[in-house]
Image 1: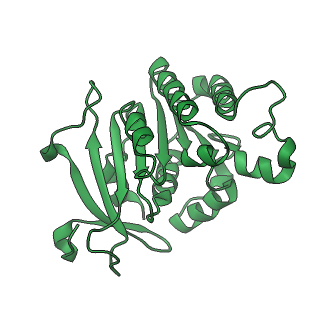
Image 2: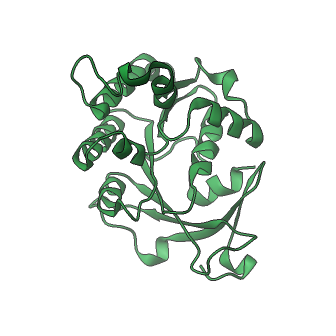
Length: 251
């Protein structure tokens, strides 16, 4: 199951940090973290979750959840709400509000407006609330500028500060390509999880490495000794983590 990876990342508690950022290096896939976190939040009694689908549509997360042992359909419309940008674009085409906004809002401004509307409707009824943004880099593909993406994340960080027990979790793929944006977003939060390649290349027993570090109040990172490194392997129905010594690979 996903328990070991969440435990390694410090995301297995009911109360999470206000802002968590996942940096996904090129040629690795950190989407499993979104699915693992989603399942953990849905299992907590009266915990609300908002899933913002930019990289994958909702059906992908339903399928991933079934493999990991949870059914998102049971929670949808109750403790789970979804902003499915991909499905909206597929069904409405160029006329959808994400591509051609009738009010003149940019894509990121519309996203903030919709996220705030969901929070206003659902936050008060829940013991905690988590907003999951599955891939910020898709915003670049849809025409958003670096400044707009940065402002979007700053607005989300402000939202988390405005309310107790509200957590924002973002992921950015190709973080080595968008390094300045990735670093700036990471410094908005309290925890950064980097999903990186192995230095030794492809290895059958391991898919990659997670580097988990705490972000200090002044925006710098914790000392080297406080960082945690684990290796991970994603199988069809579970995610496993290892220490480097357990599998004997160069990380």
